[in-house]
Length: 246
Image (cartoon, rainbow, N blue to C red; front, side, top):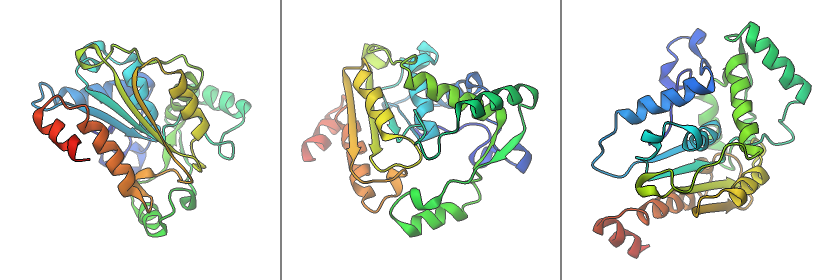
């Protein structure tokens, strides 16, 4: 199950609602609301997020409601926002000023379009992304400040997933990142995984890939990596049989 929260996708009915993600507490509450519609589930549930969402699923697995995290079979994070790439990372003084302004005008909107050339090596996929009206790239001062706070906490090791947090008292984590990602920093993801206390963890490096792993020319590799990881963690005869074929 992919994460989705307020202010993005079809939740933003009007331009005024774009980027209204709210605080981190609101983001975690949105994920909880989504998951609560799935349980009890007849199949294992994996929580997946990309980029900003990739950081959110890591945050959720770290400090989300224990009764909900304990029902997850595993977490999958794709090119997470643990640290922005140096070419896109704002100055610390800018961040501090933004946080102050956010307290005064929390719903003030900012549009920051990503450079589509750094999304993937597939120009057609990048163009479709650029033309999709749901990719509005709009944030609020409150939402951006909380997003950067989450990233900072992950980068500094203040948010960590406990090894026994998920279903059956065993956490399972997969994280993938492209080395040439010019939006979120690959090195930050590697450091996070090196220091992560979860024993069942897999860090996948995609050499030369950009940000959208799911949109790259060789995206089939990404899909296979994720699906095979999931199948290997299904405690069913069907899962074991599927994994044996890989």
